[in-house]
Amino acid sequence: MKIIRDAVHQNIEVNAAELAVLDTPDMQRLRYVRQLGLAYLVYPSATHNRFEHSLGTFHLTSLLSERLFPSKSEQQLLRFAALLHDVGHSAFSHLSEALVRKHAGKTHEQLGEDKIKRSSIADVLKARGFSPTSLLKLMRGPKAEVISNAFGTDRIDYLLRDAHFTGVSYSLVDAERLLRSMAFSRNQLVLRHKGLLSAESLLVSRYLMFRAVYHHHANRIASKMMENALENALEESRISIGDIQNGLDHELLLELRDLPLVQRILDRRLFKTAFVASDFDARSSDKLENELAQHIDSSAFVVCASSQTLGGSDLPVLLNDGKLVPLQQASFIAKAIFPQLKETGLLVAALPEHREVVQRICRKFV
Image (cartoon, rainbow, N blue to C red):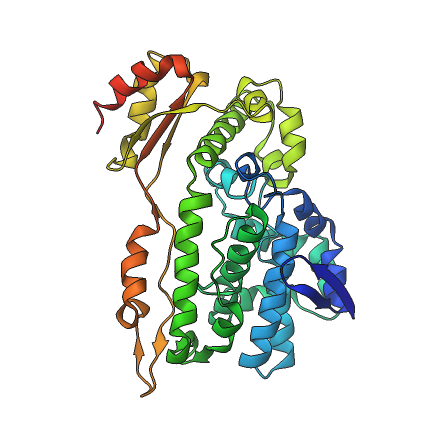
């Protein structure tokens, strides 16, 4: 048994097999993939990485699986699943995910499954008597909800970790109480009624972190600038999609630093907000970009538009009489907050000299 010191959970225990998985190249690569992409341009200390988060998720999953599942073999597979749940992330984490889906046709979960099946991870698992096939079957099954559920260990850890490293004071998650209030009933993860307040604490934290960090205007602008730079580099064959899938954040920044958008990111000379609208159909974003490009150089502006839902309510509440009800039925806080957890609207950023042109064109689309 080895003890790993963590900034959020303090001491994390790993056994020899888990340590061997951690020491594979694909897992060690996650040390160089930042958890929050370019958010450190807004919050300078937000330089934590996917490796740390994987360890934190593993730790919380260990605590929860011991309570919910008596089988030691299932507990061990869930521990592996938690360690490996983000192994398929590409450089810059979620920032590059749309590009990878577009050019490689796979999500980070699917890329992670490929690595578990074929890389040195599979060799390590087999050498220690564990089946990659059995692990993947568990990861696709209902018991993996302890990790992937909207109130699972993945989300609990990243909310605690992101708040810690950004330095914001919005980490309201009562993690210990929440974990102790969960049960596995009728082949699904459920929340006992006594844990409703702890679930609400996660929802409030998620909402506040969304507003303060994940949806921060400068973070959105920097992320879109980098996404556009990566897209341009792919079109010019400067890099391949494999370079993004298997690359490191700093490698790509240095490789592409001669591109104007990347140089601006390195110097933190981000585009400035020129137009914002709360009511915008994201399907019109391509038309808007084309219209803007007829008047402004495409390297001088970015269009941030999305209709992505960033919340989830898939945690039934087990009432004292044995009935299961949706969380939003049991909690007025959940009912109020879930509709707000959406990345909607339009933000266009550009060089200051293009502000008036941007505003004139954008008004035609809203």
